[in-house]
Image 1 (cartoon, helix red, strand yellow):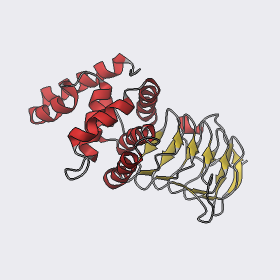
Image 2 (cartoon, helix red, strand yellow):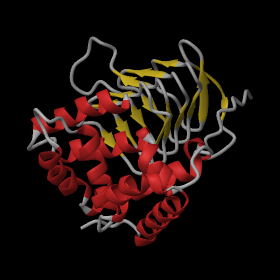
Image 3 (cartoon, rainbow, N blue to C red):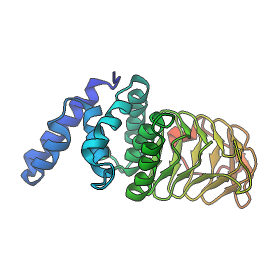
Length: 261
C-alpha cells in the first residue's frame, strides 16, 4: 500500500483545480490525469503508462496495472514522495507539485525506473521495455538492475546514463549529460557507487567500479576514473581533488561552486 503523504495529493488536486479556473482549455487534460484519480500513485501510474505505452506492444491498458503494482508498494511510494520533495526543494525553476508531476522528465524517468526495477527479476522483458521507452521518451537511460535510493533529483535529465551495477544512495542530485558507466572492458560489478549527498554536475562521466564518497562534489565536465574521498570536490579530465566541500550535503544544497583550498 502506498505511503505518500495525503497532503501532497490534496495539494496536487488544488493546483490542478486552480489552473482550470484560469484556463478552461486544459480542463479535460487535468481532469483525466489528476482529478479523476483516487490518489497520487494512481495519477503518476496513469501518466507513465500513457507516456511509455505503444499500441503494437505494451498498450496503455496492459502497462498501467504493472506500473501501478510497482509504484503502489510502501517502499517505492515513499521513495517517490522523497524524489518529488527533492525536485521542489532543489530546483528553482519548479514552483508547484503540478509542474513537477506533469513536466519534470527527470522525475518521470526516475519513477519509470522504479517500476522497471520492481519487475526486474520476474518480468525481465517488461523491465527492458520500460527502460527502452524511458530512453526514447525522456532521454534518460537507467538499467533496471541499478540500485537507486530516495530523495534523488535528475535535473534537466537529458542524456543521463546509469549502468547496470551502479549504486546511488539517498539525497543525490545528478544533472544532464552525466554517465555512470563501465570502462568498456570489464564484466560483473563494473559501475560507480555514489554515496549519500553527492552532487554530480552536468556532463560529468564517472567510469568503472569507483566509489564517490559521501558528500562529494563532481564538477561539470569532469571524467572520474578513481575513487573520490568523502566531502571532496574533484574537477578536470581526468578528475583530481581540488578542494574540500564547504557544505555537508552538496546533493541537497545544489551548489556547483568549486572551492579550491
